Length: 143
Image 1 (tube, rainbow, N blue to C red):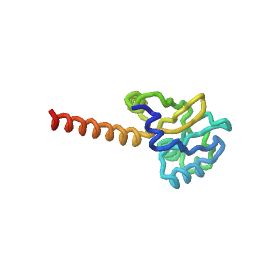
Image 2 (image 1 turned 45 degrees about the horizontal axis):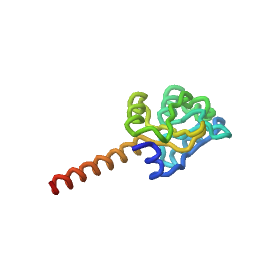
Image 3 (image 1 turned 45 degrees about the vertical axis):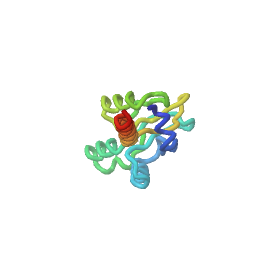
Image 4 (image 1 turned 135 degrees about the vertical axis):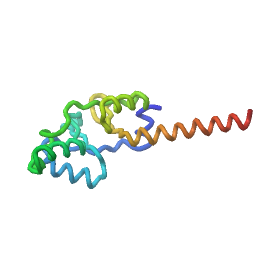
């Protein structure tokens, strides 16, 4: 199974913001959309960063709530790991585990086309395991 398979099922919609948006506004967006991260893009939809709940908790926990008035660019993660639609679920699971992150922007031709979360990966992996289990039961019943 590939990243493209996941996106075709869940959709290609991804929430983005610009780097100059205040952290406070970004946190409202995270809460309103019930998402754990938001991709920061430039005008051409190229990924320039990602802002996660962890980023917000880290800076507010260390520096206080005054940081909520900073631009997203001041607190976002700038070394964003991305993937493309042809990568396998196994490959991105390894990347997410090794990098200890839960959101992976999907890029095609240098531009953002979607996002995959660890929840998406787990959901699709469980469905795959259920299909395999069903196929094994069918095989045993007909053997």
